[in-house]
Image (cartoon, rainbow, N blue to C red; front, side):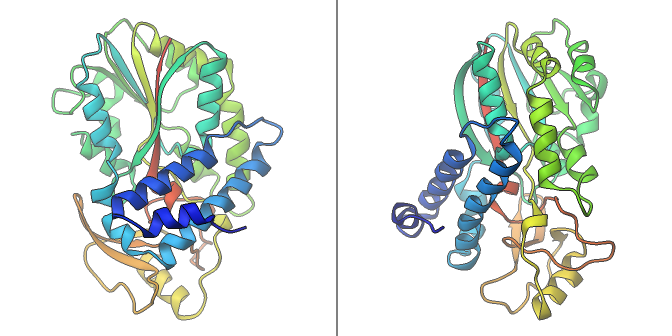
Amino acid sequence: MALNAAVVAGLIQGSAKDAWDTIIERVLDIASKPLSPANAPSEVIKREREVGLLDQFVSSAAWDLWQDFGDSVERNSARLARWWAEPYSAKAILILDGLSLRELPWILQGAIERGFAVHEVSAYGSELPGETNEFAKALGLGSRSQLQNNGGGQSHKLQPAATESVDMPWKDCEGLINSSKNWLFWHHWPDSKVHEGAVAGQGLDTLSRDAAEQLNSTDFWSFVERLATGRRLVITSDHGYAATGYFPDADGEVGTFLKSTFSSGRNARGRGESGPFVPPVAMQIATSHGDCRLAVGRWKWKSPGGYPTMTHGGLSILEVLSPFVELTK
């Protein structure tokens, strides 16, 4: 399997923005194809490998693109603020924490099957590093917990809105939606499942099965329909995740450096040594949240307790892109 000539040409010709537009277009094409519960685990892993070719190219032959990511790819927090300013009479945003483009087909298929109109299917950038608190801060919040029980206050960028942040069954979430004109609802799934299933023997296969069950359930779509009734709705996320269980092992000096720099994570705050390696396995990036070193590409390494099989916060394509689906019923 190799990248086709048209994709390679799009990555090496033109500006950094042109290259990132090509990457996002290609990843959306890979990720948005229909899935079925029967083939989901194997098909998601197949797509993981296809996106891995892009990751390998960017991290080895075109790593400077990562320095340009923040300027070339619109951040999802900025896109949501821009969307919120549109003159819709009523609107709602559903943030599914950690939802990646791998789960996009279930949203699209479920929406169409249930009579929703789909107005936009896109992908936008996470904050760097791709962490929950950074996304919350980009929206003007202290943390996602601030939204709980309509506690969003007047400081965030998505005003006015009733707010909630929970990790409850979808049926219970449906019962929380009142007649407020605008809603901002942040649910902790699938990120809660990402971290719960990041241990040895579990990982992307386990999460793929759970996503198929959750996002095809009547309870989930009853909740979505309740949010969308009389409102224009966006379903999105704060960041994606890296299926590190399928990453190759970094051995020798590279593995030692990554372990000492990142321990069992994917980023380290502040300035510091990024290593002598070419192509780089870590990059120092000045972000809107401060200086940060981030792991580049698809590597895992030995760490105390074992490196997690799923995580986020570094520089790989599916952990820094968030799906953006706009619906009406």
